Length: 272
Image 1: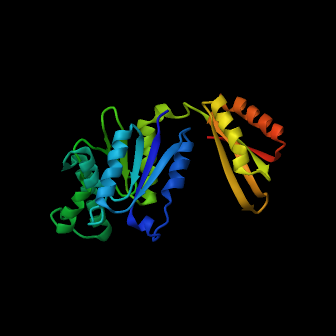
Image 2: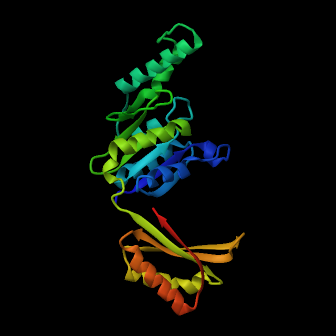
Image 3: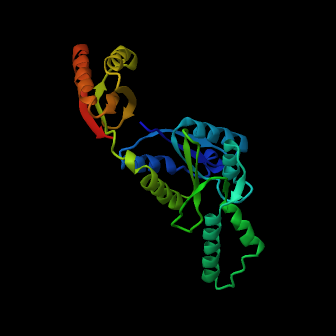
């Protein structure tokens, strides 16, 4: 299965000045298409760390979305780090430049001032179109300032979008629809679990290990809760994996819990 990853860039997230909204939304956008997020990395505005993180992403073979840091202020490093991770130069992407100039003209009309492409501010805005050589643009329906995609042959692809959710989320959807539609709903996943009262994870571990041994396509999970307002102290124990493989593992799990004399509560089923 194709794996999907997420990189969230910005000191403001790590310092708590801004709360991350991307993780939950990307999970939602992928799930709506029968896909799942495999991992997420949070990185501050540290060029060395960003470069290293992007290097791993390009080498991974995964599809990775990167949010934030693609502006043109001194604390925006993502474009430069992407180029370094790829070992290529930055260049002004002609289509990006045209779109940025369109945006500048729109702003001039909105402010009722003459359009002057040679103003220092306008020339600086073109830096937002400086992408690694070979990059492809991602359209931005909010204000036309594009993101970009880069890929390595036979390895990973990273899609770079702004940190602003109002821009980033429709751009991620565009990438998914344009490039990964062939993956939608190709590998349906199911999660089936039950609440187990009064049990300890240590006592359930041998059962979980045996299930994963007997059903190698399926993953077993355990989510303990100590102060749930309705169910109190309990463990949500379940299996997840390909829809075709989960039912047999679920029957086995219930049988093993019965053998242990476990006190079981509500069951939960979720299609992923």
